[in-house]
Image (cartoon, rainbow, N blue to C red; front, side):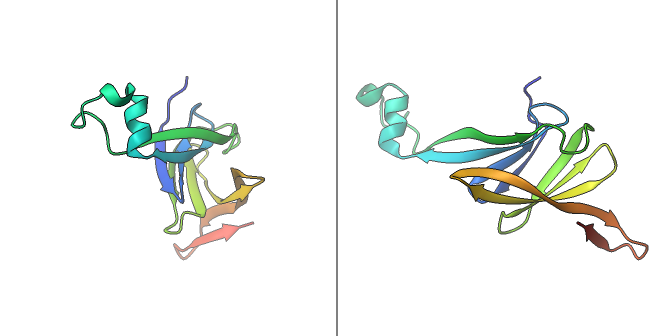
Length: 126
Protein backbone atom coordinates (compact mmCIF):
# COMPACT_ATOMS: atom_id res chain seq x y z
CA UNK A 1 0.00 0.00 0.00
CA UNK A 2 3.05 2.30 -0.13
CA UNK A 3 3.00 3.78 3.39
CA UNK A 4 5.90 4.12 5.82
CA UNK A 5 4.82 3.08 9.31
CA UNK A 6 7.79 3.80 11.57
CA UNK A 7 11.01 5.71 10.91
CA UNK A 8 14.51 5.81 12.39
CA UNK A 9 17.32 8.11 11.37
CA UNK A 10 20.56 6.20 10.86
CA UNK A 11 23.91 7.41 9.52
CA UNK A 12 22.95 9.24 6.27
CA UNK A 13 19.95 6.96 5.91
CA UNK A 14 16.35 6.60 6.93
CA UNK A 15 15.23 3.11 8.00
CA UNK A 16 11.51 2.54 7.73
CA UNK A 17 8.87 -0.04 8.43
CA UNK A 18 7.21 -0.16 5.02
CA UNK A 19 6.30 0.45 2.25
CA UNK A 20 4.42 -2.81 2.83
CA UNK A 21 3.44 -3.86 6.39
CA UNK A 22 5.92 -6.78 6.49
CA UNK A 23 8.83 -4.88 4.89
CA UNK A 24 11.80 -3.06 6.35
CA UNK A 25 13.41 -0.58 3.95
CA UNK A 26 16.45 1.68 3.82
CA UNK A 27 16.41 5.08 2.12
CA UNK A 28 19.54 7.14 1.34
CA UNK A 29 19.24 10.77 2.43
CA UNK A 30 20.48 13.43 0.03
CA UNK A 31 20.56 17.16 0.72
CA UNK A 32 20.75 19.64 -2.16
CA UNK A 33 22.56 22.96 -1.82
CA UNK A 34 20.61 26.25 -2.10
CA UNK A 35 21.39 26.76 -5.82
CA UNK A 36 20.07 23.28 -6.65
CA UNK A 37 17.07 23.89 -4.39
CA UNK A 38 16.18 27.12 -6.24
CA UNK A 39 16.53 25.32 -9.57
CA UNK A 40 14.16 22.62 -8.34
CA UNK A 41 11.54 25.32 -7.67
CA UNK A 42 11.82 26.96 -11.07
CA UNK A 43 15.26 28.52 -11.35
CA UNK A 44 16.35 32.11 -10.89
CA UNK A 45 12.74 33.42 -11.03
CA UNK A 46 12.13 32.20 -7.48
CA UNK A 47 12.15 34.94 -4.87
CA UNK A 48 14.94 34.36 -2.29
CA UNK A 49 12.41 34.32 0.55
CA UNK A 50 10.57 31.42 -1.12
CA UNK A 51 13.62 29.33 -1.96
CA UNK A 52 14.46 26.72 0.69
CA UNK A 53 17.97 26.62 2.09
CA UNK A 54 18.16 22.83 1.55
CA UNK A 55 16.07 20.23 -0.21
CA UNK A 56 15.83 16.76 1.31
CA UNK A 57 15.38 13.86 -1.08
CA UNK A 58 15.15 10.14 -0.37
CA UNK A 59 16.22 7.27 -2.60
CA UNK A 60 15.23 3.72 -1.70
CA UNK A 61 18.35 1.55 -1.42
CA UNK A 62 16.97 -1.80 -0.28
CA UNK A 63 13.88 -3.48 1.06
CA UNK A 64 13.52 -6.68 3.07
CA UNK A 65 10.08 -7.97 2.22
CA UNK A 66 9.66 -10.40 5.14
CA UNK A 67 11.87 -8.87 7.83
CA UNK A 68 9.79 -10.55 10.55
CA UNK A 69 8.82 -13.72 8.71
CA UNK A 70 5.84 -12.07 7.01
CA UNK A 71 4.53 -10.44 10.21
CA UNK A 72 3.95 -6.68 10.31
CA UNK A 73 6.99 -4.56 11.25
CA UNK A 74 5.69 -2.24 13.98
CA UNK A 75 8.70 -0.23 15.13
CA UNK A 76 12.29 0.54 14.23
CA UNK A 77 15.15 2.38 15.95
CA UNK A 78 18.83 3.01 15.28
CA UNK A 79 21.89 3.00 17.51
CA UNK A 80 23.60 6.30 18.25
CA UNK A 81 26.21 5.69 15.54
CA UNK A 82 23.50 4.67 13.05
CA UNK A 83 25.09 1.33 12.19
CA UNK A 84 22.89 -1.03 14.20
CA UNK A 85 19.13 -1.20 13.67
CA UNK A 86 16.53 -2.82 15.92
CA UNK A 87 13.09 -3.67 14.55
CA UNK A 88 10.05 -4.97 16.38
CA UNK A 89 7.34 -7.01 14.73
CA UNK A 90 3.88 -8.40 15.27
CA UNK A 91 5.59 -11.80 15.57
CA UNK A 92 6.60 -10.72 19.09
CA UNK A 93 10.31 -10.57 18.28
CA UNK A 94 12.86 -7.80 18.08
CA UNK A 95 15.48 -8.30 15.38
CA UNK A 96 18.93 -6.76 15.20
CA UNK A 97 20.36 -5.60 11.86
CA UNK A 98 23.70 -4.18 10.68
CA UNK A 99 23.44 -1.21 8.32
CA UNK A 100 26.40 -1.13 5.95
CA UNK A 101 27.50 0.01 2.51
CA UNK A 102 27.99 -2.82 0.04
CA UNK A 103 29.06 -2.05 -3.55
CA UNK A 104 28.08 1.60 -3.10
CA UNK A 105 24.57 0.83 -1.79
CA UNK A 106 23.16 0.70 1.71
CA UNK A 107 21.98 -2.71 2.89
CA UNK A 108 20.71 -4.42 6.03
CA UNK A 109 22.32 -7.62 7.23
CA UNK A 110 20.67 -9.67 10.02
CA UNK A 111 22.74 -9.94 13.19
CA UNK A 112 20.33 -11.90 15.34
CA UNK A 113 17.13 -11.87 17.31
CA UNK A 114 16.79 -9.99 20.59
CA UNK A 115 14.75 -11.60 23.35
CA UNK A 116 14.23 -10.99 27.04
CA UNK A 117 16.15 -13.32 29.31
CA UNK A 118 14.89 -14.66 32.62
CA UNK A 119 16.58 -11.71 34.36
CA UNK A 120 14.86 -9.05 32.20
CA UNK A 121 18.06 -8.24 30.34
CA UNK A 122 18.16 -7.96 26.58
CA UNK A 123 20.13 -10.75 24.94
CA UNK A 124 20.97 -11.13 21.25
CA UNK A 125 20.87 -14.60 19.73
CA UNK A 126 22.74 -14.91 16.43
